[in-house]
Each structure stands twice: as structure tokens, then as C-alpha cells.
Length: 79
Image (cartoon, rainbow, N blue to C red):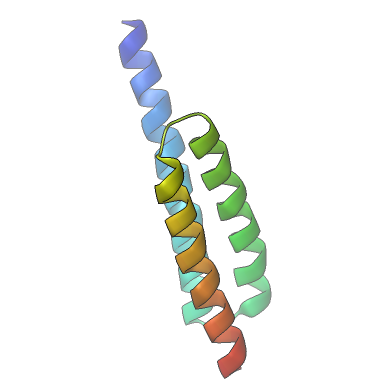
């Protein structure tokens, strides 16, 4: 029973992380760079927190942050 509760909590945290990532990508797509930067900060914070608690692998966390940052910088150069 405790395991089910923990699993549901972990699923919710991962879902929240994916939501922040999607918000960042959508902001970049819409060329709203101020929103993109703030949602990028939230996403990085959430990703780091999940990696430190071993909910996602540290290498996956680094990969996600790197790709998001690259897209953010590329959008900034185009604008």
C-alpha cells in the first residue's frame, strides 16, 4: 500500500517536470523569450530536484537541461 502511494507521488512529480518542459518549449515556439526564460528556470529546478532524489538518472537530467538551453539560446539568436 505504501508503495502505491509513493509510486503515485513519483508519477505526479515526473508529470510536473514534463509540464514545465512543455511550457518552455511552447514559449520558445511562440517566441515569448521572457516567458521561456522563466519557465526554463522552473524546469531546471524541477529536473535537478528529481535527479537528486534519483527519480530520473543524473545523465538524463543533464541531457534535458542541455537540450532545453540549446533551444532557448538558438531562439534568442534568431530574435
